[in-house]
Length: 193
Image 1 (cartoon, rainbow, N blue to C red):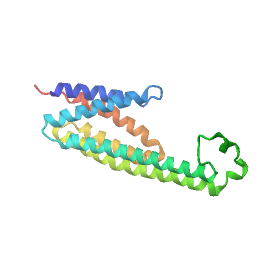
Image 2: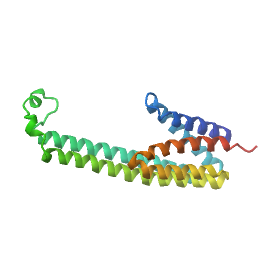
Image 3: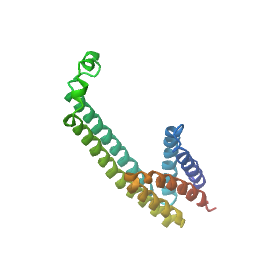
Image 4: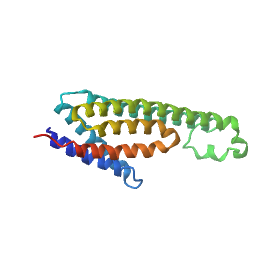
């Protein structure tokens, strides 16, 4: 793939990722944008003969997927343990739901393990997100060296800081800003020749 195609895919992908933060249409556009950006970064890596750009991007994606899967698994396990403590062994059996004494069932001893599972899941997801963002930052730093566009470095840094600050939710805004910076970075990386 030539540099012009990689650049165009990067621009479109980053634009989709920026728009993907909108609640109504976000999910599918975010996914399509992510795929386009991955392909674009593969093209940049091939063009500059540096596989670390693509590899670090893949590490980012894989770590995020693992983090989400573990998070969901911990939450599901916690939910089933909570339901089990209420005496519900089969969630599809309606009779078991009607026989619960809800006033006595909502006890701190029943709720605390579920809340603990949620907190544990969030901590695991947070850790994977921060580690993944380091790999994305490395990919952006390599792109800065190859393209001499310093905005790629800024993109990686803002993304990393955003990942750290997701714990207080302002990080999601910074990650969105990083996607905007990525869009501008791809736009500024005009192909030579």
